[in-house]
Image 1 (tube, rainbow, N blue to C red):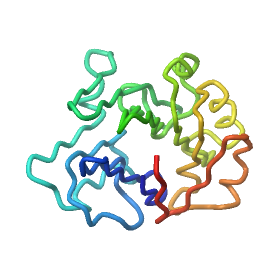
Image 2: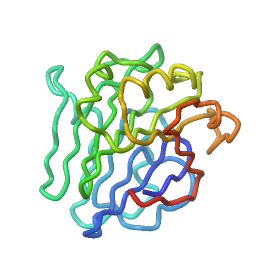
Image 3: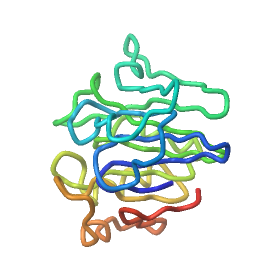
Image 4: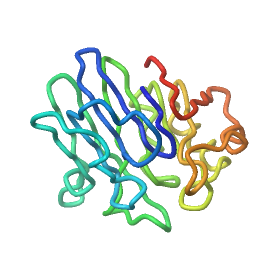
Length: 193
């Protein structure tokens, strides 16, 4: 997983499949996208033209992910993606989602722009390996609320993202997420899931 900064992430699966989530910021848009996931239509999450598109590239947005009020499970054969709730006073429930990606046997929750959701109370049952939680405290929950959400979700590792509006990263803010299983990943840093 390459953290590009802000809420932008790139995954490259073992089979070479390239997945971008919420493209907007940072570097690392050189690999052609097989799949692009967008949590909502704010400009800092939906720049789907930043990277080259592989033949047959699929772009999945919140419009594809919520159908008749139900959150969709996408099964692409080699991986799965489940849309989940994401909302707060700046993001309407029917216009924003998070995603849980099952990639090469690892479950990664990318929360998108959200505060605490009702669904988080049941997410510990998903046995998540990673949770990428926003912590800016302006358009999303702040570090204290994110820590409470981390307790509900119970992912093995919690990665703070989307920590300062208009900025790629803010180390001081990232360090305010006070959870034992915190993993700080800086823009341009790649980790093995």
